[in-house]
Amino acid sequence: MIEVHLDSWLREFGPRGTEQMDADSVGNLLELLEKRYPRLRFKLRDETGQLRRYVRVFVDGEDVSGTTGVATVLARARTIDILHSIAGG
Amino acid sequence: MEKRNDRTRVLLGTRKGTYVVEGDARRTHWKVGPVAHAGNEVYHVVADPRHPGDLYAAVNNMFFGPAVQRSRNSGKTWKEIATPLFPLEKDRKFEMNESEPSTPVKRALNNLWHIEPGHPSEPSTLYLGADPHLLFRSTDLGASWEPIESINDHPAKKNWAPGFGGACLHTILIDPRDARRLYIGMSAVGTFRSDDAGRSWKPTNKGVETPFLPDKHPETGQCVHHVAVDAADPDTFYRQDHGGMYVSHDRMEKWVRIGKPLGDDFGFGVASPRSDPGKAYFVRLDGRARVTGEGHFQVHEWNDKTRRWRKLLSPKAFPGHFGVQREGIATDSETPAGIYVGTTTGQLFVSPNAGKTWSLVPYQFPAIHSVSVANAT
Figure: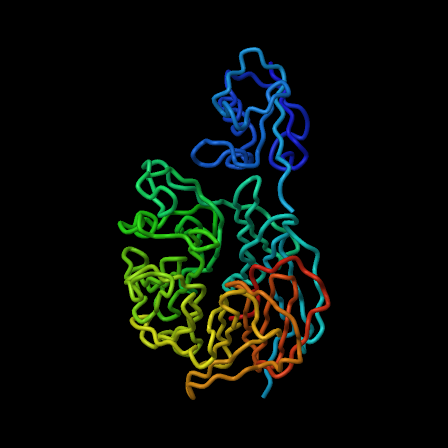
């Protein structure tokens, strides 16, 4: 099982604490998360399925948002952190 | 004889949230309510006159995308309702005339720009304009949205370019005599009219110059900034375009430039008061600096009967350079008309008497994107 943590802003739409999930890719995990918490739909990803520009997904501490993104394989992943990036002003 | 409502609510969409500003009976003292949607870019807030107390907000979040929010208690609480989605089921590929116009790209819904309550005879209808050049209709007060394909899949769309604010569909107007007659404005495409409830559209830009294109009079490509309809004559429209200030008296069939006597007739916002038909208020800006010229805040009144301009403020009243965006000026429905102007530096100017006197609401807002009035109809 993978431990999923969402940052405080996202808890408005999703789980308030840690979520335990089983998924084989980041995209698959996000789909499952969106099914459990429908208000998360289109907050993390746009209609094309891609991560929004300022959403960051960390797999075991590594930011995959700008690299393998939703296609990232989660074979031995233990934790996922979903955060919004430092931006704005 | 002066006619007034007990309370006037001015609705502000700002760079950092939504504000409801409530005036007293004389519209001289104002109470600013708590910010809603804090931290979000709110491009438009509007009241639904068919359902008193209902407000809608076009909320754009740089992290988590756009959302439509509704309040059923005049802004005390808000709730997210359905947000239209880019219609991917048909694998539409909208081409944009950007860096690679020949490469079709799959696009997602970008910012929401304008929400327009439908005709009084259709009390559950809403319209929504969005980027990139998208128009949606809801017939269940925002529980769901249907894309208006005649615009969203328009055959000429590949040639439509965005303005600086994006590929925004920012103006939606409905003929008060006929729910089937709709008007829209898009940057940098121009205005269109539909006489059949959005099934087909006719470009309506004849007479509007495009100083930024080699062809000065194309059928489309005008960068319309905003359009207001005359309260007494729904065939008459006042238009602030990138290329100047215009009026049309024939359902936008042709436009006549009226701004030339002002010199630089650039600007973004225009409003026409319900209590004083035949008038329109424009905030004239320096076309290069995009702020009020000559070092002071200014609003100009166009009298369509006398075809004359009147400058409403003296240069000494409010010195400075102020930016005002396309939804940045609004009027109420009272007599004499109230005029409200929000600036990109967060001031809200108010005139409770059709421009005779002006004051500033004593509150520093974030940059103001939109101003509307809850009792405007």
